[in-house]
Length: 55
Length: 245
Image 1 (tube, chains in turn cyan, yellow):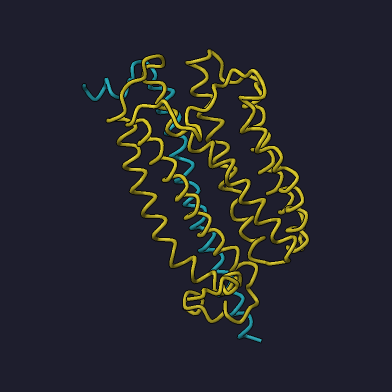
Image 2 (spheres, chains in turn brown, purple):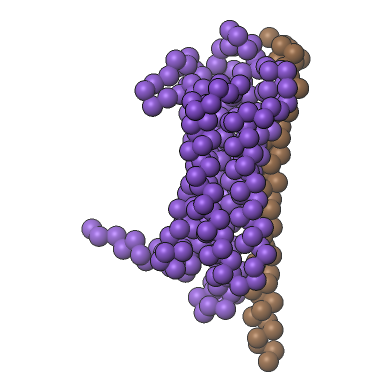
């Protein structure tokens, strides 16, 4: 089986890769978002602490 | 040896526990996705009726199962938070909602991508599809209701009510293919066994396990941020090594 045959999936390539592609995209974006949220949360905590020290 | 489970219902101890468990769930999920995808595309034989198109099943079924299961876990945590007034339970419910919504969306999307070549339609107002769409809206409703109330404890209680009432939808989705004459096919994997080819079963179970572990890993990661956000004035948070930098 050639590579192009594999990606063609007997004519169902669009539907199969459209399904797996979107799932992969969502997982990647979700992981990026939760990591970003942690960075922001930690930044906020440091800002809060620095603001407290200045008083 | 007695384990003090209540110890881990405190956000301060759970934060550390979640951090230690996270890499185990993340890596085992990644490995199982690799194994599952390999079997799905290179080992499992072509289907006699659906040709290659049936391979959408290996992402469609796991995400659909998880979208329903996560909802029940979310409603369970929300109920615990409502009854026992435990902060961590409500935080867990909030952490599960976005992942559940995304799984429901993947389920609907992959269903459309499978429906078009097999049924000739992206979407039909069939009982299974409609109730899954309602599940997606319930997740969005929970998230927006929680976000719209400023006081987090009140937001928890309002969200919990919505989550608990909405959980009646989950058995409706599950039994829809039995109760109504639907276009959507019935379950191939039943509690009484399955008629699936062994390689298809292996692919399916690996993908279900991978999605399950993924959901746990990403939820633990999210709940750690929620704990930091909501406990920001607590002494233990300011003493964390990652905050003291």
